[in-house]
Image 1 (tube, rainbow, N blue to C red):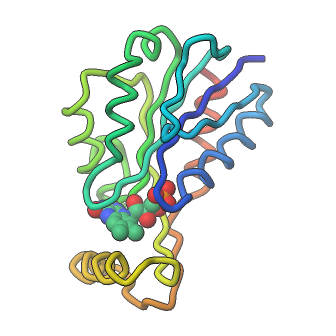
Image 2 (cartoon, rainbow, N blue to C red):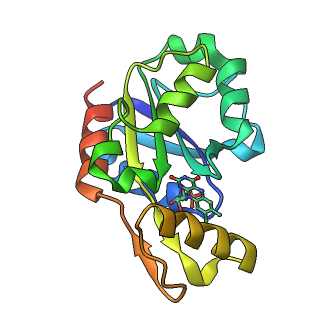
Length: 175
Ligand SMILES: Cc1cc2nc3c(=O)[nH]c(=O)nc-3n(C[C@H](O)[C@H](O)[C@H](O)COP(=O)(O)O)c2cc1C
């Protein structure tokens, strides 16, 4: 049984839901999982794990700075373990932008870091209009209108393909 460490960065919690689903799939396959928030600036020193996964969401075109900072500070440790990186964003709801190779945010992020993750994933996120403040709601409605997505401010729309998340979890378990 291997120990999987999943580190995440989220703004509204959907990336945590994806991590929780990964935990279920990975544990069903026989590994154990620990999930840790990158916001707490966690240290890898003294932590007991065999594989490492990083997951982060996009907001206004970027992952939170803590993601790149963590990768930079821990690159040698990341490279010393089977590893994977995934991104969560709503552009990935579009079939032509839902792979690591075709997702513009993922591609841009990979050029900004020196690390070359061994495995990559992209998942479409969720828009929960009622939970957003007025500024964010207006901005994301505008982005959605521009990209022909849903704009009804009373709706919560989840684009995540959970089967794809499960496949990613099975891939991690097989590393
Ligand atoms: C204010 C705001 C800005 C966002 N900006 C982008 C964006 O620029 N590109 C994109 O693809 N998704 C964008 N998203 C969608 C998020 O990536 C998506 O909601 C994701 O599920 C958020 O995950 P989290 O809850 O873990 O932060 C944005 C969402 C919000 C609420």
